[in-house]
Image (cartoon, rainbow, N blue to C red; front, side, top):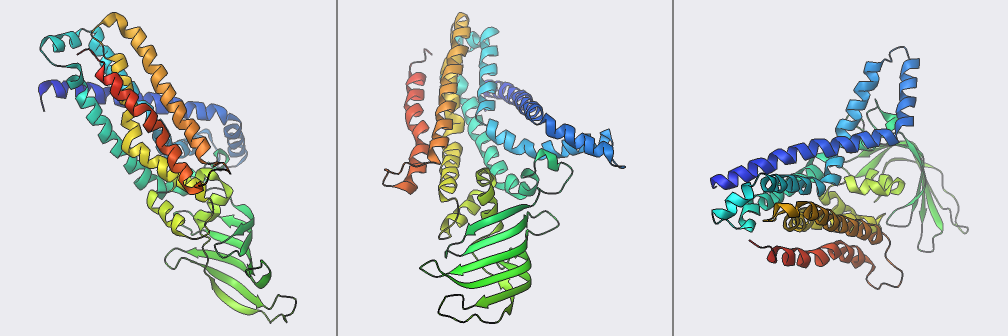
Length: 381
């Protein structure tokens, strides 16, 4: 690596670190402002308890936002390298270092090469966080602000959830799993149905605990009853120790919140898609395709849009260039956001419903990649 490359790379990484701290810090502060009522309520509850103190509330806040920092970083991953690249190139221009490099015969695109390659490497870092870290701390991430100080989120009721065979599952409470406890269902109630959607069997249990190795629910005081059709005679309840179903803790979490799918790894998303009759297929496809385009293109494509705007031979054009950078990158991020929203709601008239999320995921790349190439080609180097 040449001395010039090392110098530009060092400046970019330094600005990347500053941008990460500033942007993630602002994200956390804004999140705290919007959730101020919940934080105050937690503080009042801690003050009312004997063991509560200001230190306890601060510790719970630190614990809560430490884990939330990982999805915050993923959400900001397209913006952080743009800010770092802009700061780096603007500083090189304002201090006339860019003029010296041009006088030495170094093209502008060659100067920007270390920045682009660094963004590709940073995309790999984003993939590691998304695929390796976030799925392992899901119980911590699904907590609400009012759940600070707890190992996992609150339990919730499941009114009616259909599995791949058309059977209906109901639960008085579903308790999410934690690092110490497995996911549990309190008061499990399952109605088995035939092809005509008529109830044929019934299963109930006081408690059901998820066994990840066997991919089934281990029942406590389970009872299985047959013969529920009108022309049949109901049988006596027989003991049941296990319930195997396509409904997993992930399926139940998807039933409650669409945003849960954003925390799953791509491998787990593929497993849920392979399960017939799974819940939230459209959202699973949306996240899968948008995540692929983010890893492969979007996180460095937005930097290619920013570089021609702020890299100029004329320092007097910097303000105009920064404004153009904000317009182009803002348009790109706005297009990605709109595409994500539309991908979750395929129109009824569209023939290929399952291909709709993929088409929307590639739309920003198809629109802005040629634009980035044109802008790079028009740079006066």
